Image 1 (cartoon, rainbow, N blue to C red):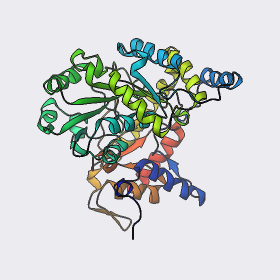
Image 2: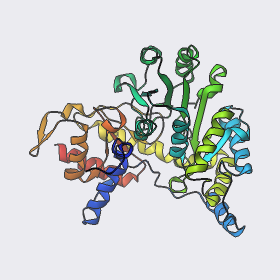
Image 3: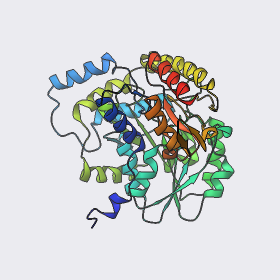
Image 4: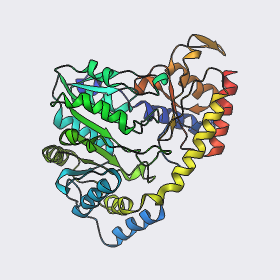
Length: 394
């Protein structure tokens, strides 16, 4: 007899975390696994941010913080939104959470009812669909492919809208594909959404600073959509602060209030020391983290060149984030070393077992033909990993 709730039973395990756990398990057995599955910069947190955290400890920041974040942090986030995105938010529109994942969960919990539909342009980040399920709403997937540079069109969006559509989630630069929507493309999509005043927009901009020459554009800067756009961001990716767990939203005030209420019953305020460090991060000039972006750019060139040389790997050139999302459907139905590869999950498992390289199946991101490979790893590891992949498929 299953005593667990239907809620938890309906929830899939995060594919990225599952693959990382499997890789760790094999590592513990003494197998030399190269992990290219997690979206985690391999840099240390910059010194100026660490120093701010040390100072916070010395200054005795050790009490509960306000549920929605320290007032001076929220003011700093408003200044960041204005500087980087041209967005005008007041501190009352900001909620600081334990990672951008909680920001997204808060929003879905306060906005969605059973039966509501959420449009997910695919590929999408794995947790979007799981959080929608947890909110008892329904994910409606809008597919794209490598041929369209993993972007959806305005007409595809319009075709997916029904009277039950409540929310659409955009993520640019995108995880897993690295695709960036241009201002022109977002404005064309915005024209569709202007016709449907009851649809809200979640714009996940966590990778905004990790881009390679494409100007970042925020949907909330489209005047007609500002009042129903929730801008999600955080410090994990751009500042190499994944374990510090700080995310935040800029949102209409009534939504921010609801998220604050929700968070007050689940986690309360985010870690006090990490919040103080985040002030230093968001107030710093973006040029302070350019060295990381430059390094990712170099690795992008290397991994694309190496993977393109493997027969059957089809790649686009991602303009942001630190992932490639090759289409490997060429291998489906083929038998290699006695194993038949029927889908992307088989392929990712094959690479783990035969090449000792951890990647993530594209099925988790809503695209069955691809796998996600993170190049947030050293050049040596990237070169060795691709060498192993090529050898295992030869």
